Image 1: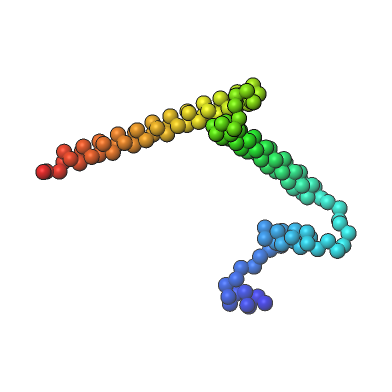
Image 2 (image 1 turned 45 degrees about the horizontal axis):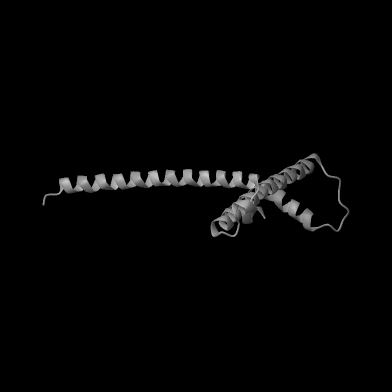
Length: 133
């Protein structure tokens, strides 16, 4: 066996490596024929991180759901499906904040485009001055 490894320049892996740990954990996961052994501290800590990760994912999806609901409400308001009388004060405040943030974003993008246009104008003017006609 060792001759094969040396001939083909293969590396010997140890049982402490990452891939061995992944392999054994997957084998344990899919091989549930035997009774479940007692969990160690490492397994408990990984379970805790999984729970916190899922809680974080749920928190993010809740934020995304609120944002998408607010955007749908904005679209309905713009289409005229909903009037101001139909909205609560909280919805009106959220919509006004959304409008303000969208306006600020648009102003920033307009300023960036104006700067790009000014750069192009300067380049064109500079190129026209250099080239003999």
